[in-house]
Amino acid sequence: MSDLLEPSELRVRRERWIDAPPRTVYDLISDVEASAAWTPDLVSATYETEGAPRVGSWFTVVNADVRHDRAWTTRSRVHAAEAGREFAWYVVVQGVDATLWHYRLRAQDGGTLVTETWQVERLFPVMGESREELLDLKAHNTAGMEATLDSLAEVAAARAR
Image (cartoon, rainbow, N blue to C red; front, side, top):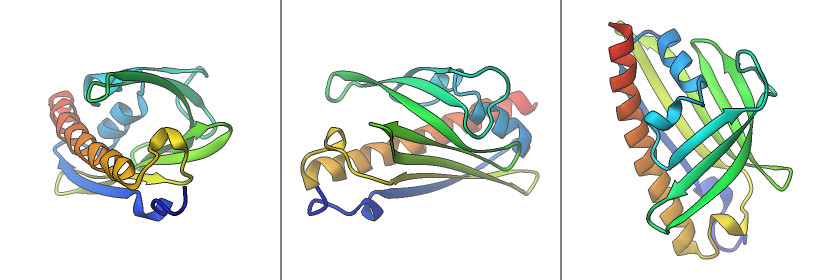
């Protein structure tokens, strides 16, 4: 699949200022079980480990893509969990870190500058079998990230009031 696109070409970064303190934003992002309320395609997420999310925690996610009338389940492993600063996880496919989702939080102007990044670490056929399909996935995830950040901003601001 390497002739289709390099994994480095499948990277998206979006930023959004949110009118809430970093800890409030972090608490929302790291609560993957509640994040279906503001994340497109996410049907449900469940931590497999108890307690606060920490590096090495696992969670299972059910996604649905209405564009292609399909649903799928993934397992993810928390890669970074620093309250008020960053939260990240790898989606693991066949025992391999396939994609990295990463949120960085920085206090700014009385709120939080949130940087969300999606990066393909290793390509798998399930992601797309042509250059066009992979670029469609990138565009779809970009739109999803923007919608997530917009919704997250609303929820976080309401919670911070």
